[in-house]
Image (tube, helix red, strand yellow):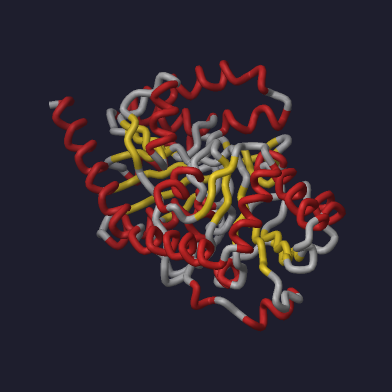
Length: 378
């Protein structure tokens, strides 16, 4: 089959959502399917066979690392020339809506993937008053699709409670050849100045909607505790709030925005993963941490909790309760037996979540959607 894919960004290591898309496209290609990707934000593709088209764009206000694209007459011509069997939309923005209208006009099946829980960001930008409007738009958009794929059953339930129909689940996998404990590096730990300390890692964008205030408060808690000299925070990533993080966490290590094998090496060279975000649709970073041998402490709001509860690979803390996050981190540091148990549980879950199996099931669903659409037309 031929898959036309629209995504708000298609830069491989930009975030977990894009890494998931890359893995899905890889699975499409390995199964012999053709893929064409349209995005306002692209990177060069090395040794791959999907066609990638950069559409015209401008930076998004308040979110300058991402771009707003434009669907033009050329885009429609490119779609017609490609002749897709199905259209996948990964971002429900203005361009995504034009791809939806294109599919409707051509009688093509269209699916959408819920990568990012945009409504949960609104409060952080003091736009909470727009939530009803945003959900109304999302409901109209997604209900016009033949299927909407959520990353977890918890998110599927949430979307259905907001009036979405035809919601299915496409879980996320992990590349165990890339993320695994064997990448632990003594030289990297030495460069961080670890010594005998326990490394608590955070990985993600440095933005308020990732609840990084909780990370700062947990850091402060350890600085005041008897474990002050036994813990080192490693903050993997970048973002607009980096300067404040550096000021508030002067003893933390900031290795920057990591790509390639540097990211899994940093995970594996840490000991514990702290991720308090309440805005995750799935939480790829938690699975990456599990696969690298890190038990996790996460929030009870958002997609990360399902991974931790399902695996018992860490602890789920009350959202916003920095004392509970601190207590769970402390418990894992002090109780070595508990730490080993949670670590092993996380590793065992990661071993079961291979991309070929997860994406193979999704490809079969796409093929069934195409058959169902063709039957309705005939």
